Image (cartoon, rainbow, N blue to C red):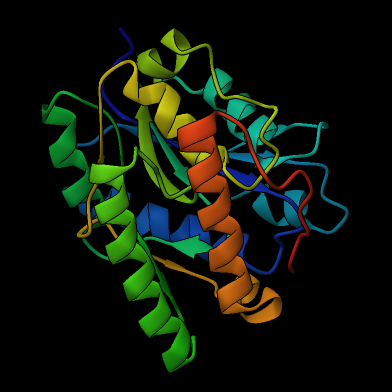
Length: 239
């Protein structure tokens, strides 16, 4: 059993424009909750920009993962983590006031993993409406079809992650969060929590298109949940 506390794990590939705000938002939540032990781990995933440079000196743990892919970065962060609760936060996300208080309440339950939705800062009204519908349907599907997690905003217990053999690194991007949820659900309960929302960048939705993005995520969710395989084998980074 690992000690109580949160290890925030931030995979980062060419995130110099966003990583500082992400770290500052986490530190602000930790200052509001000084009784909660925590650490922040940034996993530089072969960045070619100044990501590592801007992170140094911010009082966080910086590690390198040369094998590109968010799941490889998450696994490296998990291996380096010292606390029981692994909080996976994407580098273009920011914690709102109160996120950690909500999240911490679920450490007192039997959950092995829990997750909240994204809210898109500065997004169009269409994206906001589409996001609300998407997450409503995700909660319905979670109960009826099978479990899922929101990749850039979820917590998993380290002992549960180890019991399930770690992350499935054959999933490079799309469907990796659902695959984690499916494997974690064999260790215990997985839950979606609307109140545990987080701010995120709308860059993928705006550059790839709302309907295409939702379609890709939905197809990979259904295929992973029902058939134990991914649909999309490649992905594009949006920066």
